[in-house]
Amino acid sequence: MGNEENTPRPRTERRDAAKNRQLILDTAQRLFEQYGVKQVSMNQIATEAQIGPGTLYRRYKNKGEVCLDLIKDSVDLFFEDIEDYLEENETVPPNQKLKEIISLFIRFREKKAQLLTGVEETRSTNPLKSRTKSPLYMELHQLLVGLFDEMTAIEQTQTPHTHSIFKADMVLMALSSDSYFFQKDVRNYSPEEILELIYSTFIS
Image (cartoon, rainbow, N blue to C red; front, side):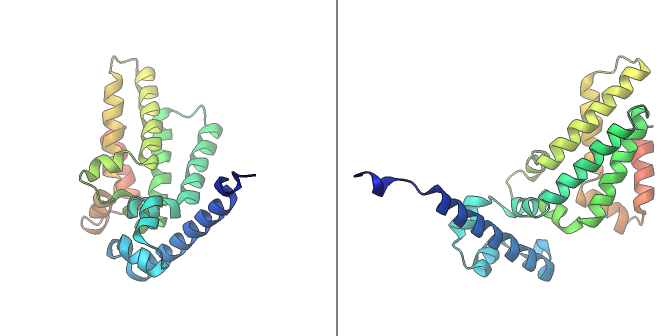
């Protein structure tokens, strides 16, 4: 009886945390749509949501994490699409599977351009390291490495596994926001042309 005061109340805390999370995401979504992801700061999100910066930073280290949470469901669906494709096309050669996965990612990038850019451009002393540690990058990288390894096995070459890692990195760097939109907006390549050029450069 004497310890009742010290008994934790996790349900209330969980409810508060869930409420804060939804408030942050709703506010961020509204601000991103109004001003664009790049123009919105973490402090602005906290101010508009009427919460303390500490509350915001306890849940999200940076704007990239906010963006990732906003597209989490879309990311899950994207990987489900990849899984469905791979299950239905087990006998398709690995180079064609690679091409289809890249095509799916390009379509995903086109649909979620702003938020994906936000995920990739986290404020960090080492933004490249942050980008390659994101769950989206890591899962895609793993898939690509596996398919490059399959290609090596079929070709019966003595290519080391590290080459597959390198190729997967190069493909994903070519598909990063800055590189992809440079090719699209400055070089005027269409998404279909970018797909074909990545395929011919790194895969075929």
